[in-house]
Length: 248
Ligand code: ADP
Image (cartoon, rainbow, N blue to C red; front, side, top):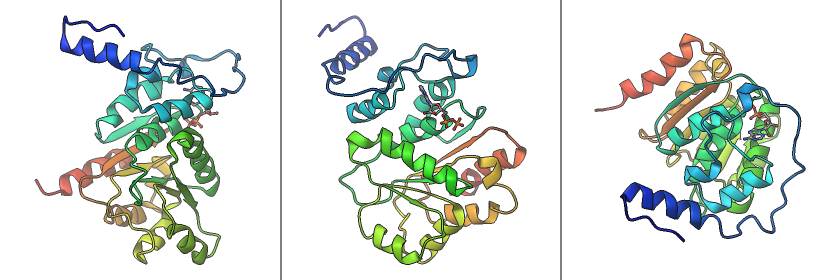
């Protein structure tokens, strides 16, 4: 392990890189490499590696097993900021890796020894909920994170049973989750992370009142992350409003 005494920030970086290099990848199986040509919107531009982001090793193992070698541009931009627990409003085209851009920071902060919902990931459709929960399961595999997906269409009894077991990440559509929170079946009172994927759709007049109500079940200090392929003004308004409404 090489340690430079020249500056404290250098010591930190050197240690962190080296502490991750001791064979943590051996025994992991990455999928076959995808050698298809990549367009600029999915190629890392800053040259950051996931290992530069101070992520837990178990999370890095999941990222590597998913076949992600380098962060995409939206991941390079969003993950380091999200890790500081600041609110985020991110826009990037579909297919550029937005899901992992919020799943990775959400997983990084989860304490699996705590039997509480610690990240709420809202999406507009059942299909997207299933896909998002699969990404959480893949990336969180070595962390032993418990992920639940709920979108309605099943009986509440199934959800009640599932929520009697530990759930760390809750993924779903707004209506069903509001129903669960309103009936005290899902306890969001210690959930510090609130994510909206396809935020433009979730903030359409159809969903917007539900989103507002849902936020009221979370602690005041929650982190709000909005991801969208388009960026209408209602999205910006929503992000600003909870902050303004919070006590000083
Ligand atoms: P979006 O949410 O922006 O539509 P997705 O998150 O669904 O995009 O990602 C699109 C595809 O890119 C998925 O198949 C995902 O597994 C893959 N992907 C995401 N991030 C990376 C990465 N860093 N390296 C390689 N593939 C990635």
